[in-house]
Image (cartoon, rainbow, N blue to C red; front, side, top):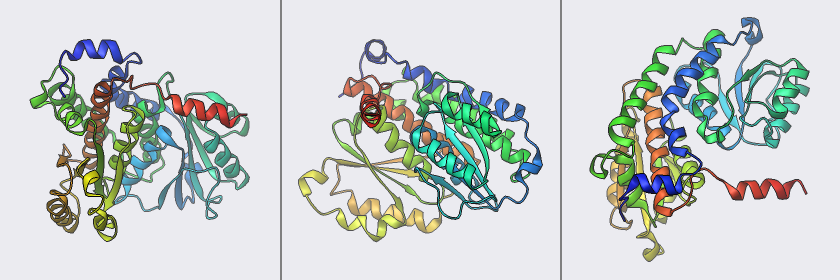
Length: 355
């Protein structure tokens, strides 16, 4: 299957303008940095903090995943992403809670937020409006307002970069302005040179991957230390944008269970395409595990695709893997002849939940 007459396909299918959202991410990251730098909060608000918890689900949680992986080797505090209605028992007044809901009306996040208020946690809300903005104002909780009008998954820059700026102001991490601008620049260059629709398939990594996984099930693997967020993002974007299922797992854990499952049913295994998300700074033993595992399952699967991160610093490398996956999901949506933006099943579920 090819993506011929791509401009016509985009005009016919991409009614929600997902392509515009994707190409706008580099600029969004720059704008998000300015939002974070303008937001004022006393450093005393962070005094005594000994752990950080992100509250969010779906597209509003991926920013927390990104910062967790990015800051893993730098920040001296544990970071977790809480995708639930309730909070872990350890959350207390010395916990910094980032309540992230792009719409401001995510019921899981609002529920966990209210629990955080009861426990007197230090809370910072991040939203474009909705109920979260209202109750944060009522509770006197600092609230970072980000631009609305996007699907939550299209607001990754807004949901992550301002928080980096705040953590820097708090003295918990070093200033990240230079790394953020580098990541934005690399993504802009990638978009222009190897991802946008104007790039031929032979040179367009995202389009070529989409063609290979069309009518197949992608199995996405990465490393648990830094590329966890990219694996999660790829799976989520393929589901929401492409309306397709995929599977994912992480090294080295995958080598202790899932690797054994690559035997049956043999006919169906041939319908699986393995995507290895790789980073130059992956643990050397993990890199070796990926090499061996790829060789082991190559003949059982429908093929192996390796995707290497771009850039030098970690933030750029993580964003580069994410950005490739975002475009893969867009081109796969075109192949599936579905508008990437609407998520009708989620809307239906929310409607049923209020009955």
